[in-house]
Image (cartoon, rainbow, N blue to C red):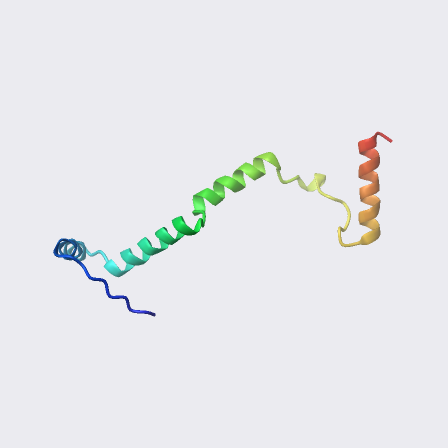
Length: 94
């Protein structure tokens, strides 16, 4: 792990001392601040943002129930072809 030296002015030194006196691990606080700033600048979504996006997707495209799922193996070429043909025929009203 890389060691990082940071110059602090007297006001910040007093704040660090007060935080340490309250049991705050300043190194952990700094790591969290660096990670948060990196996420903000790199555009990495937070967990709650990801959950909200997934919820919106599932509302629009719900996962089908077991009885509504495909009844063919998508990796079997012939079965897949036949399923697509049936689907197209249904759509065309034949």
